[in-house]
Image 1 (tube, rainbow, N blue to C red):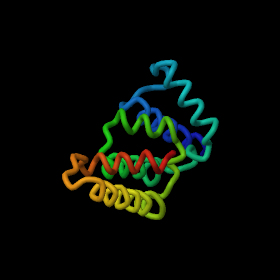
Image 2 (tube, rainbow, N blue to C red):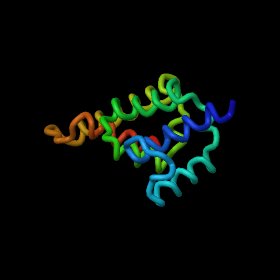
Image 3 (cartoon, rainbow, N blue to C red):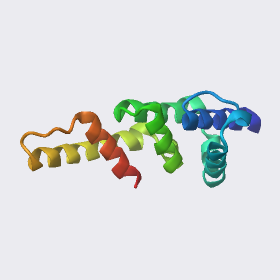
Image 4 (cartoon, one colour):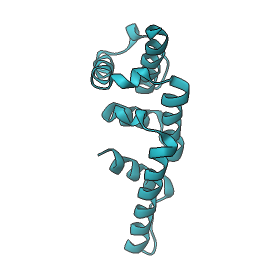
Length: 130
């Protein structure tokens, strides 16, 4: 049924935005407003399976870009549609390409770079969602 798919998706989006599991009644008004905006502007996210789509995409972003929960919340809050992208068919190839381009630019720009791999990947993520 619709409730069996929508409710878990809303609860998972809420957990991403807050970095923890909370009920809709206990979230701060700012996050409640953001959740309403996401649901209104990106209703297709509610049709996605939490485990095979939303969670796997969020986990990829966490792992590949070395994002803390608060950083992931910022990414999801600013560009929720990223959760609807396929990891292997879309995100991974784009992130690898952007990471390679940024790493090449960093190496050419200075022989002793202080930028580490996670900084390059976070920059690639920011560039891919702008």
